[in-house]
Image (cartoon, rainbow, N blue to C red; front, side, top):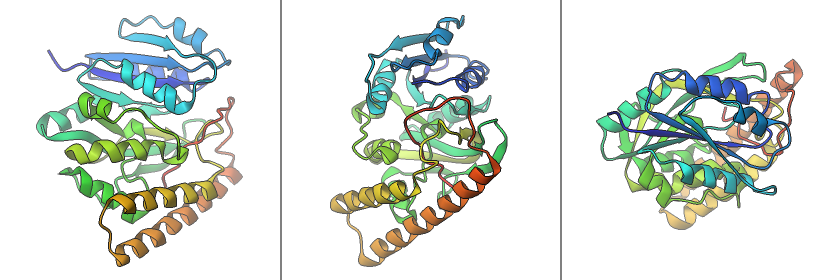
Length: 289
């Protein structure tokens, strides 16, 4: 029997994109799945929609009104019972073979605690904007998790990608709980920082899904705040890891370059109208250009 994979989805006012995500999850070629939705107290009908789903692999849990994003991510993660766990945000998409490929990556590398991959970026209507983003300066195959984390520090960006691009082994992920939003725009990277050093990671330089930019996405309006929060994360990294002066200068230079690229991309997409969405979400995510 193939290993059970838990796909966990924190939800808060997830319509209309939640329906597309559900379709992409139920169409996975990897069949031994449980799909857990954690509804965080929204008011747009997401819970009513989830109650209509008739798939034995799907279940949902409810969180009280006022549950934070990090709390909902944590509750969703802890609800997963599979050997592997993938957290996917409500407006993202997975390619049909995404889970099958990443399970294979982890099974071929028993010392790996995470499998990561590239992803596409699509607009609010699902139109492709950028292909195969992420995994900057990382090579295909297994590598030391701590080394990958240092690459993120030096490159000034989250080279691991959003959670849709990551498949975790359950035990290392649960050991890193809870997700924390003290520095909310690096919520995902703050978790990877605790998981990756526990072993190796496996890199797949191939897109396995799509990150959607829309009015319900994180950070489409917050490049300046992203810069401040990533610099704070870099400072915290320096407090716990040996870094040379030249590496520190490189890291600070690269994070500002990444910010300029994001600002340019945000402006171009806004002019084109690619951010327009029928629903609104109060949290922000990183475009990750």
